[in-house]
Image: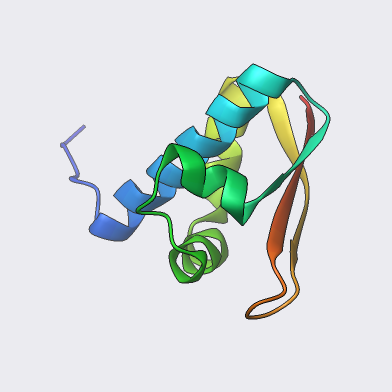
Amino acid sequence: MAFKPKSAAETKAAELASAIVRVADSEGAPLQIGVDRLRQGNPRLTPLAIGQMFRRHRDVIEAALSERGYSLVDYADQGPGRGMEFEIGPG
């Protein structure tokens, strides 16, 4: 199997997944995680980037959560200035 380098978007999606997992590990599941909480751990995750990464690479995020025993229950994006929120449950 040949090595396939990750694109920048896939790398950013992995960073988002990692941030979600860190919060879930520290607070336990089930929980709801807002953008502000994710940005505390990784300031490079802007609301625009979070939305784009979720829409384009949801599979990467769900795979990372699954590896750690979590599942993505829901994702809500209420538009600019209104907030985004991930709902995480036990795997």
